[in-house]
Length: 516
Image (tube, rainbow, N blue to C red):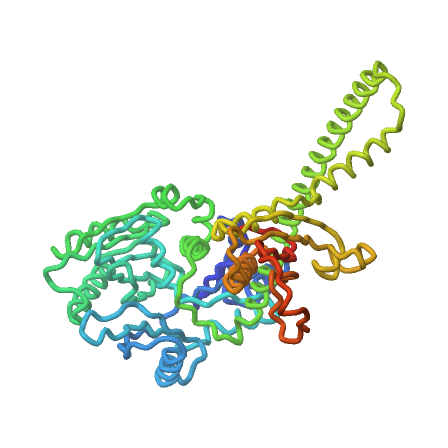
């Protein structure tokens, strides 16, 4: 938990404490030259520590204002304009959003507070500025009192908290846990007990609340007396006998020590020790310090955030490094185990191979032979596709009879070149599967026109198959070319041809094929 310096300033002097989860050191300085010098010496050993200041003075102003509901930059400008209208002679002011009205407009209700006279504050603030301590905030003492509601578990909607300070007896009224009104009654010189006059002051405060319509006469106000030095017992008795709409509860010193976890020695140091403890645990929203005075604290906070971010990054980096280191260790262990198993299997293999007969070839030669065999198996071509294509076409032409079906796989320019005796074998082109179909039309009755049409339809059927790339008719039973020369004699009588033979070359597509 970060340390901080807590200060409570009043007209009589200043109470200072060092906080780190609790008050570790508390000291009181009078408003004299010696007191100011002691205060400066106290701060000298606290360089760089943020400081929170509470002010206990009668020169304070509190106002509740209702403003139209806005948000963002519009709200900021509206509030700033209102603050400058209300407080022209001081730089110590603030505005805090309290609640929203329940009417149709749902306007915003703000608490405006300020120090109207800074004479009490200035000598102490000059020392703080001279020491260049990061000022976190400046708070009216009554707003610090609000923290007692949480610490003491006070649940009454109308609370009037009475506390005794160096400056006097402070009355702070809270409505539903929120600050509304405060009054400071100075203590008479040398008086250590509270008599009937202070009970009258509390009664006057009760009537003042009714006059402001903050409470009604039928409502009961619970008065909580924080008696840190056990000197306010008579006040409790006087209040319980004063008015019927006041219910007084006194919290003695022993109960404060137990509930607030503050040491008895700290409470004995200064009357402001109780509120210094509350300020250390709960920082009020009502911060009167201007932005220019809080610039050092903003730099301090940003630096801490950078340190925290750097620490978190270093921690994550270390965690990542440890994780990688553990993973590397695991991988090395697995590698050693795998190497051990490999050595074991190699020893077993060598032991077994000693019993094998001598091989005529080396193991590398056997490996190459197996690789070649696998390659041939994976890349070998068979005439299955050609058979499937031709069979599919023959299903539709039962009068086509085949006499020859040849198949080749090689580098041929086309199917004609593959089966021509004049070519010199395979060329340099791509690999192709080609086929030669030799057949005839049966039965044939001498109708060449019908025979030729049947052959062409058969070729078209072959050409439409997805596995076929090209089909060429090499030979027909009758050449229909008009350029052919006719020869012979009409007087010569020839025997009628009894067959219609044909030849067809086809080229199959490369790659996967499905015959249809």
